[in-house]
Image (cartoon, rainbow, N blue to C red; front, side, top):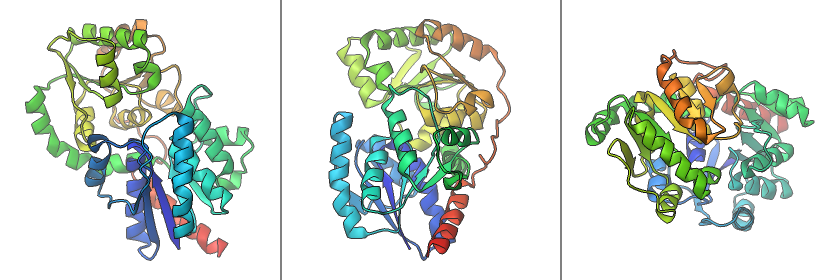
Amino acid sequence: MKILHVVGARPNFMKIAPIMSALRRIAPQIEQVLVHTSQHYDVKMSDIFFEHLGLSQPDYHLGVGSGSHTEQTARVMLAFEPVLKETNPDLVLVVGDVNSTIACTLVAVKLGIPVGHVEAGLRSYDRSMPEEINRVLTDQISDLLYIPSPDAIANLKREGINAEKIINVGNVMIDTLVQLLPQAEKHWGKLQAEHALEDYVLVTLHRPANVDDETRLINIMGALIELSKIKPVVFPVHPRTQNNIAAFGIGDFPENLKLIAPVGYLDFLALQQHATLVVTDSGGVQEETTYLGIPCLTVRPNTERPITIEKGTNRLVTDISILLDEAKNALDRPKTSDQIIELWDGRASERIVEHIIEWYRNRS
């Protein structure tokens, strides 16, 4: 059996890595091919993840790069088709909801190759988000839907998906988190000394809705400046966000608002683990903070991970004018114990591998 894995953007690496590792451990006879579409390509934001996550270098780099959603999706499809024809895998495994996810799924399905979608069934019910379109379409045409939480079952059934395609395996992001926490802790001492960290708020923002809108970004940075007067704020700045901060002329930041360069996953995990509060617009961070028991404010109008609000530590901030007040409220709440959601136990990858083996045996 041959499985082809697709990664395109930063979050994909954390989802594919534990699956590839579990396959090597449980079924070493299965051939694995790794394709990196290079949808997002920056040394700090991309290559470093291969090192930290123990991923081998990709068998194929498609070199797609940035562009509009349409351009990027089309370029991935054109570059991926010859790879798929050359490798002829028995299964294509895609993860998440980036443009590479739907692009590679479309190509595989048109060539008659089965597709497994890891992290299927998540919904924000906001069709203005490109990721929502990618999620819905990928789930509609994939053969195997590996869901991270029970709420995804209802979402998929509502859309008419055959229940036999839906497999509740848990959250592969938590697999990576559990595996790397001990390594991340070794990075803490250096980070703490380098940035003088003690009782701080961690911030991560990258979504276009937050950072491409000049007024919104100015208001967010204003709230963070005020928050930094209460508690130090550490902000590893995504390249997109950094470019817009400069382009919009936002500056004059106080000493307690520490804008630092992007960090690798282990460093970021260490920063999360020791933070008093996290402010983010990331999907994965909502999940990680829930597992770690760290209060989290998600600066978005909605979330495709409502279980992190229902059973976790996450709260949505839809109105930037109340971001500072929400942060103050979160800081006043005591840290909760770890919020363990069903099957978020570090073994989701094993369940995926076991199911793939059974599926292939029955198919053969």
